[in-house]
Amino acid sequence: MRVCLTVPERFAAGKELPRLLGEPADLIVFPEGFLRSEDDLALALELTVDRPGTVLAGYRDGDLEKAVVIEGGVVTDEYTKCILTAEEREKKRSGDRIRCLRSSLGNLAVPICYEMHFPEVCRIMGLECPALMVNIIGTGMYNRLQYDQWRSLAKARAIENELPVVGCCHFCGEIPLAFAFDASGRELLEVEGKRGAFTVEISTDAVKLIGYTADRRPELFAALSME
Image 1: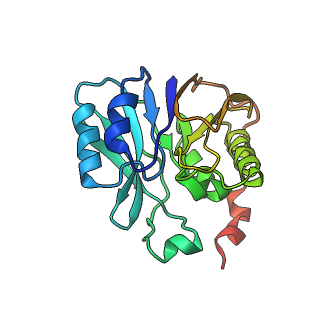
Image 2: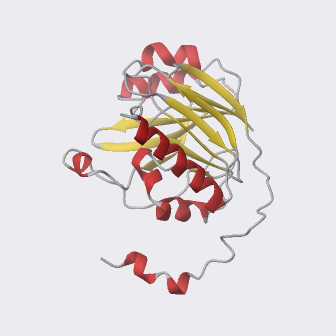
Image 3: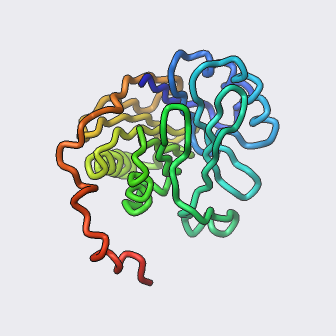
């Protein structure tokens, strides 16, 4: 699968969409909150009517933070961010179901930004046998420690779910990044501090060599759901 990870200018979907949608890829990924209005979404739909492939974009829908799948000029599925930071909870509502997004490429696991920090979120999505895990991120990283931690978390999610994991954020003043790891945690792409579109070839049919999912003991995991 040819995946294009975008690091676009923030608050500039009108300018960035025509430029970046021309990239040849099976899947083009835009960050959390890239589409910030109904007008932004309408433009994305207009520009993808005749475009082959799949677009995955963050969409700020009022007080909901969503990921939308766009194919052939139509939103074919959407997921609402469920895990919010304390600051986000003051101004946003959360979703009520953790699940994969459906696409013509197969199921896509899309933990939105902060949700990557929760292995439970990614594992629930991983149980739906997604082709790929995609972490759409809002801003860049605020410091080097956060940058290193985020990459480490993405690598861990790849290893423990035996899934390729990719992600990208906006170019907006902090440390922007785009990354890709294969299903064994091997780094395929790391881009730091650059604006643009970055393409990586992802194998989505890798054999699960260890079989973490099959070795789970759900009957012993009840403590995870206790307050």
